[in-house]
Image (cartoon, rainbow, N blue to C red; front, side, top):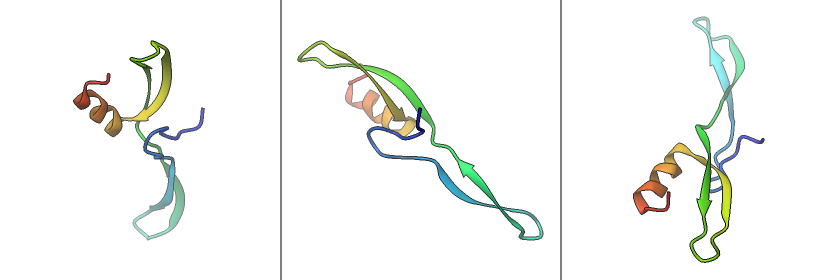
Length: 65
């Protein structure tokens, strides 16, 4: 599974981890992703999508989930 939100396109970010001496080492920031089952009201089919927590909050606000 790739760590990418299917709706917003959020993905893993790579930045530097800085120590007290300002030495830079690479680190990763992973998005907060969830797998959700969404039902299409017209066809009745159920789709599993990977969405970020921010988009999941928006789906709940709109009454889709």
